[in-house]
Length: 284
Image (cartoon, rainbow, N blue to C red; front, side):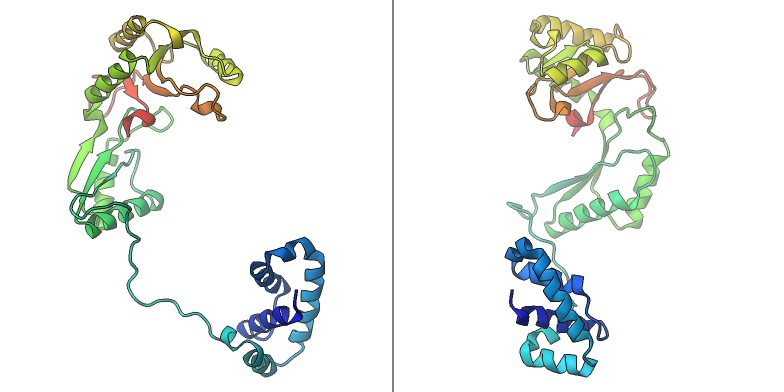
């Protein structure tokens, strides 16, 4: 580490902060310039502290003059751009063919977290003259976080206030038959199955990376169990549809994830029309 580098960064820091350099800030600049110094951190810290002490004893005028002499480029403070900021391009996007969506869960009004993402999607839709869809992610949800009927209008009001321009409104609760159609295709090809295992059995199987007995059952039996789910022959928690994934996946949560589950609660829009509901992983 050169004494000159430590000194120029100390002088710059002092000039920017009323004549008092900060040793930690100076050390950070040095490590960014030369990562090899990390293996000599104790030595570098001691040297920086000595240099900072020397620089801080100088008058502000002397600090500025010395910095102008040894590193004049560091006297120039970067000025923020005042021009319009451009969105980075979307890979392979074609003007007029871009379709984006907003997928709020109607449990309340928009908040700053999801509103930011919606405004960004709106900006890209306008940039590429594309279409922006408002898709309410209103599958049944949970008892802890239920769908609120008034939230549908609250979300629309929030988007209007933010200037977000969507072309079409869709509801996942209107598309359940389509989800059933695709579920039955997966069940028929053996890529998914109906599981009756309780939570304790599931936990043990996942920890041991073992498939449950239902995973290898005959497709006809699986289809019959699926129809029984739809017909109300199972109660909540007694059967789910699982996707066959890697039972040796490093994350146990990704081993044969749930695609559909039973919920007996009425839905604000479709009432008790459905009792088997897709999970988020299946309803994108």
